[in-house]
Structures are given as C-alpha cells and as structure tokens.
Image (cartoon, rainbow, N blue to C red; front, side, top):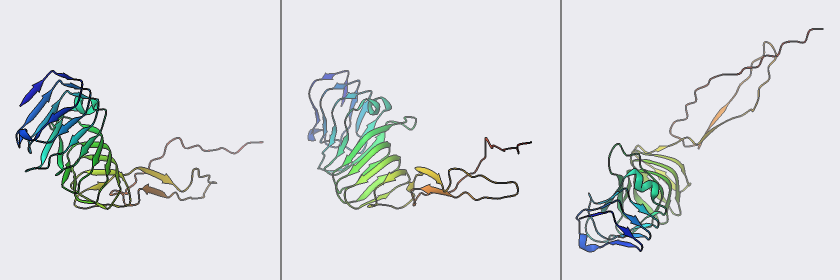
Length: 219
C-alpha cells in the first residue's frame, strides 16, 4: 500500500490488517502521532514525511516489523520513535541516506535492531536483544541492557554491556597538566587520559604547534 501527498490533522494508524505487508508513506504531513500495528520485515517506509508527534511501534503478532526512514523524514520528525510490542528493526531507506533519528525509546524486552544513527536512545526495561549497527550518541538504560552488533556507542550508562564488535566511542581527551614550562635542558612529561575508560580505541596522536620559546633578557 502506498499513500502519497496527504495532510492528516490527527493521528495515523497502520493497523493489523496490513499483516506482514508493506506500507509506504510519501510526502505526508501528519500533525499527530503514527501508530504502527502491522507490517513485515521489509515494511513501513517513510519518504519525505513531516510528523509532529511520536511514532509508536506496537505490532504484537507474527514477524517483527521494519521501519525505514529517509533523511528528510528523520530530520522533520519532531517526536520520538517508541518501540513496544514485539520489537522492531529501524533502518534507512538506502545506503546513501545519512539518517539520524533524534530519539528512540525502547519499552520492550523483545529484539530491537538499530541500523540508523541515533542521537539519544533510552531503554526502560531489561533487554538482552538489542543490536546497534549504526551510531548512538547516548544510550541510557534504566535496567540492565546487553548490546551486540557492529556499531558505535559514544556515551552509555553503567548498566549497558557491549558485546560482539560494538565499539565504545571516545568522548574526550584530557591532559594531566594545562601548561608545561621548561628551562633549557629540562624535560617534562604530559599524560593523556582518554574518556570514557572503556573506549575501544585509546590511542593518542601527539602533535605540537605554537611553541613559545622565551629568550633571556639582555641587560
């Protein structure tokens, strides 16, 4: 099913009658929320849509539903993607689409796979079935969560455990000294601390610039 160029001043429902079929929404302006209760693994596609509310994924029957977003829809989505029911797969509509969802909230212990980038992700229940293949800027878990996949998480709460090839990104580098003054012939040591402590890559490349050398004052 394909819906094109519609303005909906209330909420939109993709109900159970869709089954495991495909629903494509193109050039739609939706003032309310979107409720996804049907669709399959290839499935609910958003193309150049403007959505003022949240997208609630609430399918409970049969196979898991996949939601695919293009960049325009992700940029114009004002609310969150809230995953409930039997989970979901969140993807971009194509490899060339640099899609970043502002917020994803997971309220299920069932499998959820993230194939897009996400600025903020919140998990409200214990879950050992999370897969991250994109980039998550911040992952906040209210209970114990295990994440697999090959993506990157830059910031996470202590109750998040990463496995497989998931990388923990570097959020900052600090030095043990803000300045180092040396006399002629003296040496000094600077130590770099990479944050967070469990960052996947703690390598530091050093470079020097704007070195100030004071010349002795002549009488």
